Length: 324
Ligand SMILES: CC(C)(COP(=O)(O)OP(=O)(O)OC[C@H]1O[C@@H](n2cnc3c(N)ncnc32)[C@H](O)[C@@H]1OP(=O)(O)O)[C@@H](O)C(=O)NCCC(=O)NCCS
Image 1 (tube, rainbow, N blue to C red):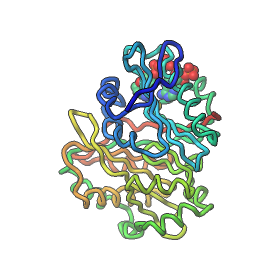
Image 2: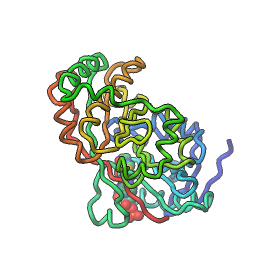
Image 3: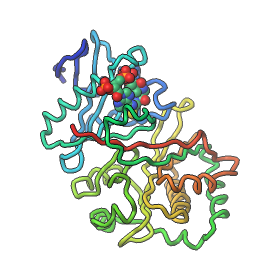
Image 4: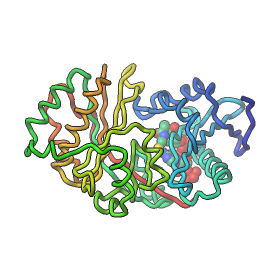
C-alpha cells in the first residue's frame, strides 16, 4: 500500500501504520510495561480492527513514536491506547506532539467524537492529572506462576473460601442474557461501573448497544451473580503471549461490584474456566482489576500458595477523560 504522509509537526512526520511496520514498532517497544506489552500480539489485529487508527511518528524516516485510537460509544468517544516513544527520544515532549496530532487527525475523520478517554497504570501526579477528569481508580492485583501450578492454586483457593456453596451461585451469561444485562440502565449503579464504563483489559466502553460488537469480538467469558439483575459482574479476556521472561502468557480478569465473597468466587470460577479450555502453558501472568475496596481481601485470599504468587506490589489503574 502506498504511504502518504498525514502531516508534520515539530520535526516529526506522521503516517498511518501498515502491517509491514511491525518490526519497526517492535524495535521501539522493548521493555515496555516490564515485558507485559500486548502490542506484539495485537498489532496485526489492530491493523484490521474497524474504527481503529494507528499513527506513527518518524524523524528523518526513523520511527520514534506510536499512538492509537479506537472510536467507541457509538462515535462519541476516542479511546487512546498503545502510546510509546523510542527510548532515545523520551523526555522531550514527543508523547505530547504525537497525541495532539492523533487527536486532531482522528477527530477530522470522526467529527462525532466529543471526549477522549484513556487508562494508565502510573500516576503522573496532581499537576498532570489536572488536565483530565479522573473518572476512577481501580486496584490491580498481579499474580504469576507456571501453568502446571494453577490446578493446585484453585484447590488451595477453594479450601480457603469462606462459603464454598456460593461458588455455584455465580453463573455464566450467554449472549442474549449479556445483552440484556449490559443494556439495563440500572447496571452502572448496581455494579458500580468505574466512570460508568466496562473496562475490558484497559479499554473503557460504555454499556451501550454500539459497544456490544466490540465486546463480542474480544472473546470474553462472563460470570455474574444473576442472569437478570447482577450486583457483581466479571469476565476474563483470553490469554495472549507477552515478551516477559523470554515469552510468557498473560490473561486479565476484570471485576465490577464490591461483594468480597463474589470476588473470591469469580477469581476461582474464571481461572477454572481458563484451565478448562486448556490454554495455559509455560509462565503465566494473571492481572486482576477490581474496585479498590476488594484489593486487601483478594490479596489475602491469594496469599500463601507456593506456585502461584503475587509478582509485584498491587498497583492502580487510572481512568481519565478529557474533552477533545
Ligand atoms: C510514557 C512515554 C510515552 C512518555 O513519552 P515522552 O515523550 O518521554 O513524554 P514527555 O514527558 O517528554 O512528554 C510530555 C507530554 O506527553 C504526555 N505524556 C507523558 N506520558 C504520558 C502517558 N503515559 N500517557 C499520556 N500522556 C503522556 C504528557 O502529558 C505531556 O503532554 P503535553 O505536552 O500535552 O503536556 C514514554 O516514556 C514511553 O514510551 N514509555 C514506555 C511506554 C509507556 O509507558 N507508555 C504509556 C502508556 S499509558
